[in-house]
Image (cartoon, rainbow, N blue to C red; front, side):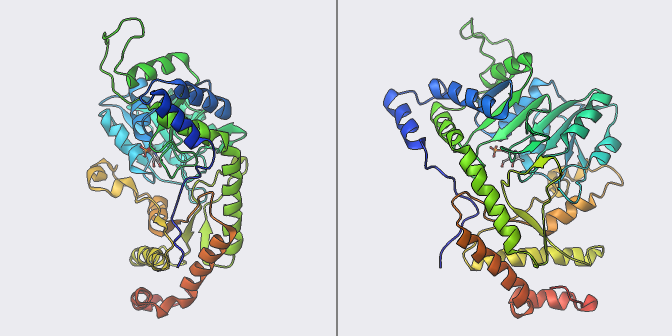
Length: 401
Ligand SMILES: Cc1ncc(COP(=O)(O)O)c(C=O)c1O
């Protein structure tokens, strides 16, 4: 049986040629022409004034918070429904994450909840763009302006995503990107920090390089880090950028095929807001459940989502669950504000699935995946796990599957 991974990068351009060039020239560390070429090409594509390469998307977030002077005692507003790195970076600088819920259709931070959670201690809003769709940046920027807050955009999952024609990572004070192998463009491991402010760019460059002053070798005014990207990674990144239009077109087509192939199935895809361009980093959906208000049944939907993941895995199709809300993890439980329940984040975390979304996926592959998903819902009670769910749901027995 053919195996379909969740992701595999498209490395069919100049990646090998550029990497070999690094090897042959000896420029394999963080100096070399590809670093600057990649940064310049990234600025051109995103229309960002400044772009700085770093070693991954997590350190990009750390640098953003450091550069803005966020520190212990400050609060940073962040959606609880996000990848853990967004929250961990806030703790790296000793600040306090203040969690907000998500909105149900596009799965991004709920702007009304952000407004509610702003306090005199709030220093920044960390907006995360999830699965290829962007947070409502015009509304977040307006709130930040009103309350004099910094805005950081975690655009790790939003390369090629836009709101009103403007690229992700260029709305806030600082934008951060990841180039892990499953990202829309990859460098193996890698990241980028974007800003429109020359002073911030200078600060980020100093911080990522042990605060090494360009004109005084081995003198350091502040504690810095080695968060640099290698020339080899930048070479891969440049080759990736050369083929990005092709990658984005393919991903868009993949999403369209999934939507068509799963019409009629009891699933709801992440929506695309008018004015937004969804880059379809990961085609994601939630399983519908008409009984979701009941807590016991909410538990059951997790089982059902997990059962679908298992069902597909048994058929050599790799998928991923959506993120567990960060506030439910042991180290963040104590950060939950009183009376905060995050019902939307909880639902998205319990019922969501990311489907294989890599550019090399064929139309046949996608239709095969869709057929298997539909089979899961049809076969339902015949499978072992489904039997279990069926028993658990007996009381509410209805046309659920
Ligand atoms: C939303 C989000 N933020 C941050 C990161 C961290 O990026 P990296 O894995 O490159 O450190 C990721 C990566 O997967 C991510 O999805």
